Length: 251
Image 1: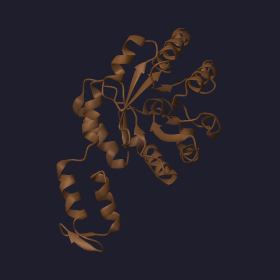
Image 2: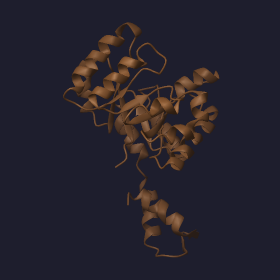
Image 3: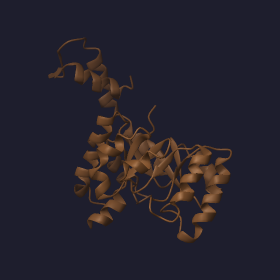
Image 4: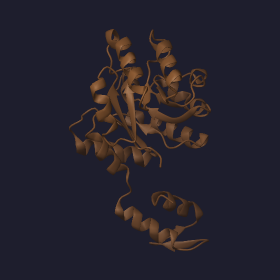
């Protein structure tokens, strides 16, 4: 099953690592980047390294070009764990890792989404709306400025044969309705996962990605309509429609 929920936990809060792992997310991300202040980078890396001696998780390292990138990259290589590379723009950098989630959060990264997705070590694209908003000078809560970027990631992922991309964070951790609306919107565009910043967001995001019962009922009618071209609910059904129905049913 393709992962839909990705939960960040600050790399300098080792007391939270086990709790995050038990929180039900499909993927736990130990964050060495935005969640950790510069003065705590080295101690956070040491905490992550120690925990990874007996556990497995995805690690978000610091971006290429920062003073911490080299040591972070050495850590994930030594532990053999997947890595999330922020500010993903350079396919050559991504090719240096074994298993990568490329976090696309710059204008250059968006424009090179197809190249990034085509790197053999890249398993998934993820969208960093907050950083991109800062670069573009737009409100990160406004969906409209990011429609192009989100679509670029969806198309690039499909063209490269990757699972659908992972959408960026919803910053209001107490707004379940807002989170659900964000996930439903992302799902409409073709996204298949969500970055979460609090454990309470995980079940809400997972439920919002699940097909509604009405969708599942439609899908069941379509797949039982038989081969060739037919009509279901007054609409034409052919093989591409059946393929979508099978995806909804998880077949």
